[in-house]
Length: 220
Image (tube, rainbow, N blue to C red; front, side):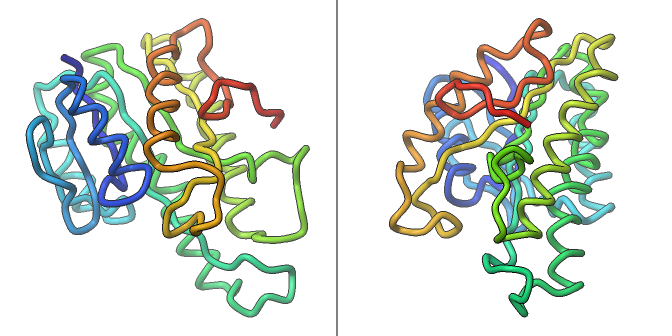
């Protein structure tokens, strides 16, 4: 039984990942701003990844525990249009980067002692929308934040390799969730199932990888 922590586990792919981890026998620390889901194998924890006090409390909750896998899934999407989309203002940039980038870094830092005890792994849920080679003129804030999150994952993979900690970035697919919309390609169940396989495959020989939920490499 592995100890897994999933941020943003209250809905969508995050919720489904937490459920699938628990269903296969892992113990899941299910984190969300209002507390994650409860149930067999699920340990709900209140965590706002932009709140320093929440992050400090998380470090305390992990004291003496060995964390096998951290899944940084919490994220927001603000503005889907082009450069003149009025919804993409300074506040939207600040909130998006606070959650999608700074939140990832601070969550990793909060969990690092527990990850070192287990020589665990870190999975950053990114997006192919952060790929420079696949750039489009839309959703600028989200694309920029996911490019930064992927870069962060790759940089962490270099530093943490000496601790035996592997790090990967993953695109969950275009998923039928509140963020992805009802016309998206795949279900949350299918995305989560593929992601769990990718996390299981992650090791020090593949650290720094940027992959689809289905396993294909993504050009960065």
